[in-house]
Length: 602
Image (cartoon, rainbow, N blue to C red; front, side, top):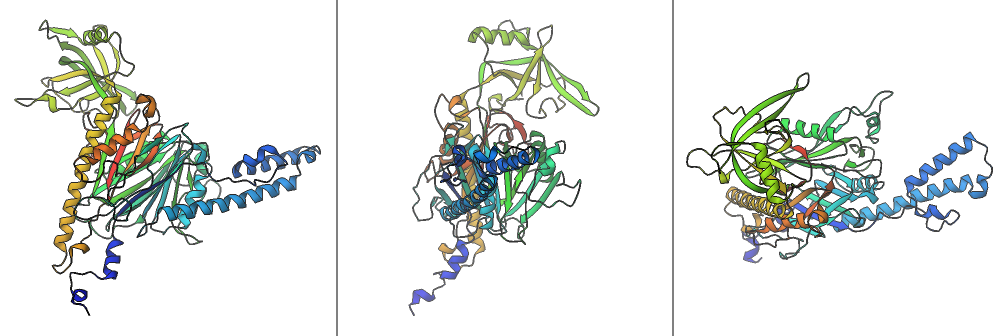
């Protein structure tokens, strides 16, 4: 036997296989197409039926039967025999099931990985609304019980052409497609309403020690929510899925590995109240979790789908479709879960020193109070005296020739001593009105204000400035946030690599100390942004994130897979350039006109 074969520095095939199966994965694939046809193509007795979905056919059959039962209408036989229509629906169901099986097999083949995934993410445009629950169930049948299929329908999605990031070695470069080539690129695409139909599928595999939990909450005030989860068993009259539910799918096998203590929660739903309540519940359980998500909506029965892998009568079911509620997955044992959030706020006009400010409380209802601030006066740099806060607004209007539609007042505490306040970020507050003396009333826009709730005394000094929204500022903000997130991922990767190498035996070869990191990003972008916001330029937000993430890395700027949806409301922390930006301990709130990304280091 060759001496090299007996050397402990040469790993055996079995040991290499075991190590490869531990590698995390983030792989995406996009399908720019409508769902498969679900009717019998050669049926021509009724011209319009050949384009109908299975659900439309079933509804028509049901309506047809009701008409025949209620009225005597023999003329219907001249149009179409009832038996033929029922047979058509049955054939359509069979044809649709076959087409979905083919699609599911193709997805599994396209997203093949060396080891079984733990999460399969689906994002689809509205044309897929009727079919996404079926796709989710078909994929779940082909995946292991430790995998969760989780997805949503929205007016638009964010997708990346075939892209992989697998765990890599200490060079910190990324083998994006598993073939040893570390230079493959794929620009993320924002497929907006009107850009065509598309389905994005991504698979994630966590590193050893990672965990997956699913949670959901329905809107208890909606009578339709009793049927929001049709796949779950009902035990009788009045029984339904409880308002909240959670289940662990993949339990962590011990404490977090070195450098892997981060946690991310992804929330999607079509009900704002349920989504916000679920975010509060997760924040209370895991204060350090990075929470992100969005409100979605399609034209089908369910906006959000969630299913557990496994097939057969013993498979542990999860709700197949969720409407009038929200669902979440919680991922633990991550290296990094970094929020990258942008509103694109840009300062306009001067910075003013606040002369007089007052905190006010208003009772909204018993037990609940609203807190606002009254900024009565600012210091006038020209006269050295005080001027009403409205005078600063009037000066801005004169300078610009009018006021922008989006306008906020930014507020921050003055830096004490020799510190510079230029490093502090403003908190943006909504301008609610003014008083007779020219003072401005402002209120927090995204949850409790750091200033209104802080209990500052009369000696605390503040500065204020006016802000609007700007596309270029948004790109710069995303680029800065993503650059910081990329550095976090690379630093965490180095720490985890060194910890694994130190823990290994001296006889173990370097090749066996597999760098266990992959990276990807989830996106929840306001459906009002996109090309309309960025002067008709496409996919600006997603690609700004990719470029920012690549700063300082040896890999390509577009090597970060990105997937997600265009939302009707975004869930996340504070934007990067604003007060509290990047702080994951801040409670997530529902926002508007923002770009919310979360970068995951798996």
